[in-house]
Length: 282
Ligand SMILES: *Cc1c(COP(=O)(O)O)cnc(C)c1O
Image 1 (cartoon, rainbow, N blue to C red):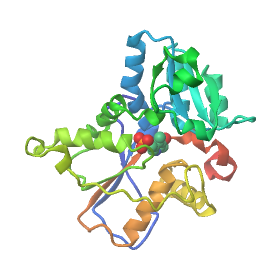
Image 2 (image 1 turned 30 degrees about the horizontal axis):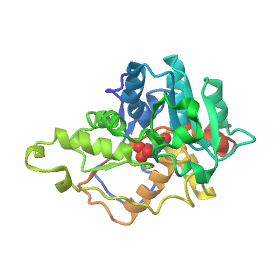
Image 3 (image 1 turned 30 degrees about the vertical axis):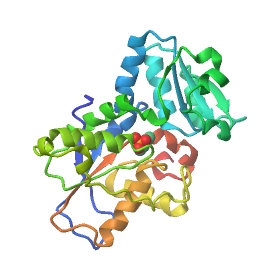
Image 4 (image 1 turned 45 degrees about the horizontal axis):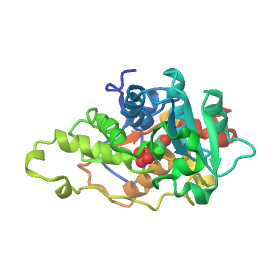
């Protein structure tokens, strides 16, 4: 699939008592089974820069369930670029995600959660991993200018008829990139500074207990959504986005004239830890 022609599909309502003109989904999850969804775009220019830099390896960061680590491991494997992942915390037993990373040749280095918090400080690598100083560094989640530039490509696939774009957020790189892309494409861009262009809202009530946490209700939403739409959601991000969206729809947040586009940012590899509860994995 071409990275600029990902399909948009309409969703069948799983929820009742709302009316909007369109409720569609951009299926970035269909782009690639492993370098999935938004990670493909955030890695694109980082990977090119790493290859052009002649660095001996690409170095990046993530937790035990990180889609970013998995996508990076696989992308580097494809390009035969050695990859190192700095992992938050210690995993005497590797998670399914970390096992995959290692299978694709990523070298894993573990640091305590406390030390991990200091990963963006200058001298972190020199102090903890002096042998990795020459590696090309990509921040956690691909959260840098190259990542945002890649994510801004997603905006090219979003027709201007939509009144709302709904996307799940981790570092916010994807949100920032899409906004950057839409902003540049907009006819009023010439007369607005980016600071004036503030029409976005963060709904942060839908974390279900925190990153990587979930509840039986969330699993049920994923199974219902699959039954009705035939689309798999991931337990870390897109299921929570749908939970939040369903609440907004039912609480009258949207007007009947609104056209909503949800972004399926992928991340389905992260479902390995809840596979036995998902109807499509039975
Ligand atoms: C990583 C990820 C996100 C978060 O993206 P950010 O750019 O860090 O905000 C959202 N959804 C899925 C499925 C992801 O894997």
